[in-house]
Length: 105
Picture 1 (cartoon, rainbow, N blue to C red):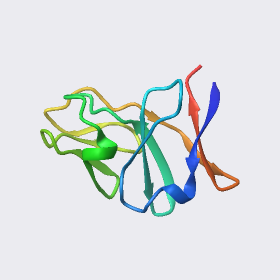
Picture 2 (cartoon, rainbow, N blue to C red):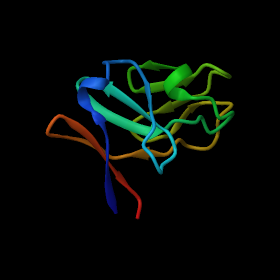
Picture 3 (cartoon, rainbow, N blue to C red):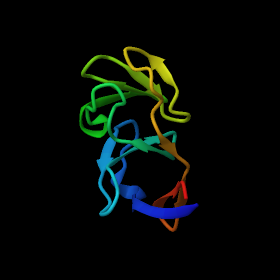
Picture 4 (cartoon, rainbow, N blue to C red):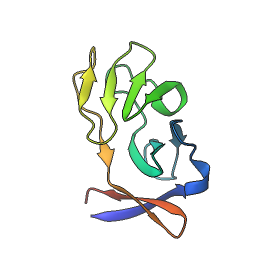
């Protein structure tokens, strides 16, 4: 497994999804809920909408506004269809004011 620096924690706003692009990687979507960071792939698994630009966060649920599909940002589990493929999520941590994620090896 490898770690990737995603962004400064100060760039995240509580309750607002944010699209983050790191050179050499697909886009991520970062969330701040109760002061803790959560990170997933940015594209909805149903219609490829940008969750960080068009998604709505309700607690730990990201809702894709294209077709109202929803996922749990902690697990990636589908909460509401038409989505049926879980959302890829990444373990996130804060180190020295920066958000880091763990990638699969």
